[in-house]
Amino acid sequence: MAQVTIHVPPRPYQARIENGLLARSGALLAELLPQASKVFVVTVPPVRKRWGAKLVRSLVSAGFKPQVIQMPNGEPAKKLKTIETLAERLSRLGADRRAVLIALGGGVVGDVTGLLASLYMRGVELVQVPTTVLAQVDASVGGKTGVNLGAGKNLLGTFHHPRVVLIDPEVLRTLPDRDFRAGLYEALKCGIIGDLDLFLRFEQKRAQILKRDPVELEGVIAQSVKLKAEVVSADEHEGGLRRVLNLGHTIGHALEVETGYGTLLHGEAVAWGMIAATNIALTVGRTDSVTAGRIADAVLSLGRLPELKVSARKILARLQADKKTQNGVVHFVLPREIGKVEIASDVPDSVVIGAVEELRRLSRGGWGKSK
Ligand SMILES: NC(=O)c1ccc[n+]([C@@H]2O[C@H](COP(=O)([O-])OP(=O)(O)OC[C@H]3O[C@@H](n4cnc5c(N)ncnc54)[C@H](O)[C@@H]3O)[C@@H](O)[C@H]2O)c1
Ligand SMILES: [Zn+2]
Image (cartoon, rainbow, N blue to C red; front, side, top):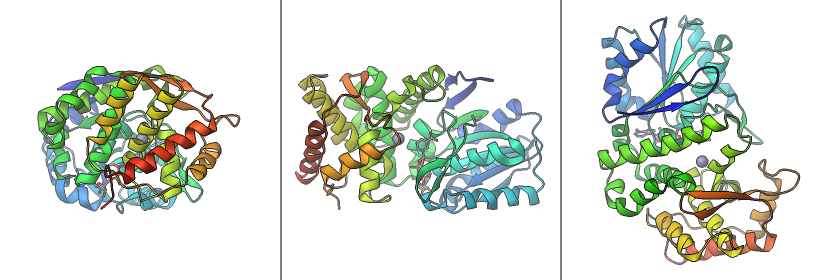
């Protein structure tokens, strides 16, 4: 089993990554949380149907009496009303300060359950059991919780670290293909930011990864989590270093908003954003054409991406209004070489526009045409 420690105050915690871990989660939690009064599994119908019984069985055989609480599926459920409804359920079911909430699902369940755990009785224990690639490599580690407001995504949230993150790559077997690939872009991002070996895995074992070979997936996920854990451990609250995790997210986020949430999956927007950042790095002389070509190939070879029909000028305007903008300056994370990135705040507008126009062209040129 791969174990990664996330060093954050007041208490470090572990992410454990292993095929088949779901079936052993009860025993692990019994050891880790002997004082737990009641455990509540928060999940959504599609995940409950496929993986709920396995988790519940494991908890029961370890002596817990888990209760499953369902929330509606999908991003629209990531709102404050859901937190209130779930909290009322918890209270009716007798949850007290020693209750433990287990988030079984993708990033939406993780973010909502995390926020709920940080608020319920001013904070109860949280366990993350992520079931999408995105949640396994990104959302479940780092302690960010949140819900959306009408004005934008994740505008209401807290930091509430889980007690442990239990990652079983086998659960990815039932993930829809598009969600699976969208999560892989975030894993690939970890390679580009700081792990040459991880990037090489994508270059050399792409076919196995895309076929969801359990051994390859376990490796990819463990290395991605390790990278994220290192960054989070060094910079818990996104002061400086944590910003490198935003590779592809500056333009990616603007693409998500401009195309209307739901058109592009987050990971797909990040994929386009990473290609744009790479083109920018090449144009301003921060990287060389071989590196840029390898990054673009690695992204584009993971499958088709939806076509982009956005105006480059509108994207630029969005960037200037984005929350990552500080004092009117747009910051970009730019790849320098594979495994090394830098933050740039001096990218001319014309270069940004050129990079977005290049995305439009690429998405039309056969690569990534939407169905
Ligand atoms: N907290 C953080 O640091 C952080 C980081 C990145 C993203 N996020 C958040 O994560 C969310 C996106 O997460 P997501 O992409 O996992 O979306 P999601 O949670 O909506 O899951 C995607 C879909 O897959 C289904 N699903 C989940 N696991 C499955 C499985 N094993 N088999 C079959 N179906 C399964 C879900 O029911 C859903 O329909 C966004 O709200 C984003 O803001 C948070
Ligand atoms: Zn992301």
